[in-house]
Image (tube, rainbow, N blue to C red; front, side):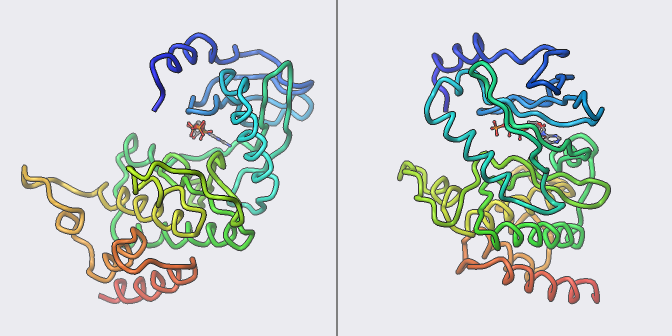
Length: 270
Ligand SMILES: Nc1ncnc2c1ncn2[C@@H]1O[C@H](COP(=O)(O)OP(=O)(O)OP(=O)(O)O)[C@@H](O)[C@H]1O
């Protein structure tokens, strides 16, 4: 959590670039897509090719810290290593007057956050299993390359005309990275940031719950657990319990894919 001083410094120094600003020789900033804790992301045009792209700038306050620059370099390294159509391609890495930019493919899609909270999309149990199955396939591409994403949340997964893309490698790591020192008072954070496949399964379990809750109509004032509230099959709940590490967790992504595929056949037959 940012302190008041950090928030004030961000407000004073982390002003986004104005539209029309140049980044490197070729890129012209159009507008801000979003501001996260580490970066400011813009749409931009490559003036050489006329192509639209996305540019993530390391926040100026972070660009003054060794850890900020290190995490920027890490994100660039991981994005370069990741290949496949399910991830944005990294075009360029630019350092300009003490500012740092990742220039990447613009993903023209809707995040699952947009789909649920803006478009009012409702995902049934079968829809959720289908999306999860495709997401696991992308995650298996990452895990095969020894990469864990560790931030598979609804704002970081996009639907691009029926196909998924995963963005934001700001928290991703390699399987042989040392784990960060997480505060033992927050055990959930330790699970979310674990340097193991389980961190991705845990996030995907929560991702699936967001999809399933899109169709939930509360009928009681009393809050109940997700297992009591959601009317999904016991078999799918079992899969989710393993993803969320309530029951003996999955150790590799093909186990999740196999369970989901068996389950889809069973549920679709009913
Ligand atoms: N390659 C991309 N194509 C299209 N939109 C993108 C792309 N990358 C990021 N965005 C959008 O830009 C916004 C901010 O993205 P990003 O995920 O980089 O930052 P964040 O998660 O908010 O920040 P941080 O990682 O700094 O905490 C989001 O709305 C996201 O959907």
